[in-house]
Amino acid sequence: MKSTLVALASVCAAALVALALGGAANAQSADGPSYASTGELMRPENFREWMFVTSGLGMTYNQPAQGAPARTPNFTNVYVNPSAYRSYVKTGQWPNGTMFILEIRASTSEGSINKGGHFQTDLVVIEASVKDARGQWAYFDFGRDMKTQVNALPPTERCYACHRDNGAVDNTFVQFYPTLLDVARKMGTLKPSFTGTAAGH
Amino acid sequence: MKSTLVALASVCAAALVALALGGAANAQSADGPSYASTGELMRPENFREWMFVTSGLGMTYNQPAQGAPARTPNFTNVYVNPSAYRSYVKTGQWPNGTMFILEIRASTSEGSINKGGHFQTDLVVIEASVKDARGQWAYFDFGRDMKTQVNALPPTERCYACHRDNGAVDNTFVQFYPTLLDVARKMGTLKPSFTGTAAGH
Image (cartoon, rainbow over the protein chains, first blue to last red):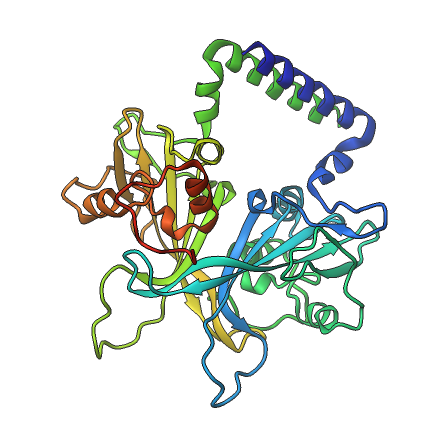
């Protein structure tokens, strides 16, 4: 009990000092991207404790090929760091230091008492997108071997152009995030070029 | 800036007083179930900021009827209050004051650049399960009209028996929550009666 009080007092004191010295902006980005001394992005251990944005199942941006064999679809869970989420909810815009995680998980239909539809199973891969301190977006793939740190994908990878050209807010696919789409509509931060209907509206 | 400092100082002071007076257990359950003076459970406003557990699409515990017309499936997002999550991760068991939210959302396949699979759209209904201060589970349905407070469903509703008989841990369907199933396996808290394979293991 006493040690809890001391620990809490220390945390509070540290937070007050950080706010006094660095201002709220620095304190807020403590949960953002973290880099190795080599410049590689570190894979966050606790992203499942970040803000859950949405999940999809078997989403694809390409026209499914006619006659292609059916594949078991994967779930895609999207998370964003809490300080960026709080900033977005207030402003409808993503601050520098925003970091999204895409957690891709396999699915199955039958198990335990379930008889239909799909539920989530094993982790397949983790990907990330980061808006850095200069406001530039970059994309990362930690791979099926779950690397602990990786360099950004080359800017020639099609994720860069696709997010830039099709993101409803900044370079992000808010059109697929129902509650965040509501925020963008309210704040008027949808790109003028975004005219698609999505997320049920 | 000054007001932020004052606000943080107030929060810290309040937290220290709460810990000193009530002990850590009470402080931890501040995010748990909240009841109206009539005894009805209040619908939490901020459950999307709780811990995301998993999502499913079109899951059903009944055998789908042969020849039944295809319906557009709904997503089911599961959240749990953070203090209960932290306790579960340490022990593999749900403390009194645990509260789950089931957020059911409609789905669609086509919108914006998406060409296949399913993404989430409008909110359909919110349901809840609560392990109360006596350790008893109860189930709640806030309805399609999103009531702000509701009484527990009658114990004769089949959710009670189904969760009691089929939950892999306590009365909860941890068999469908991959990361929490890992915790239960590690802590040895799966029910002896749970033998089903699920969540890809």
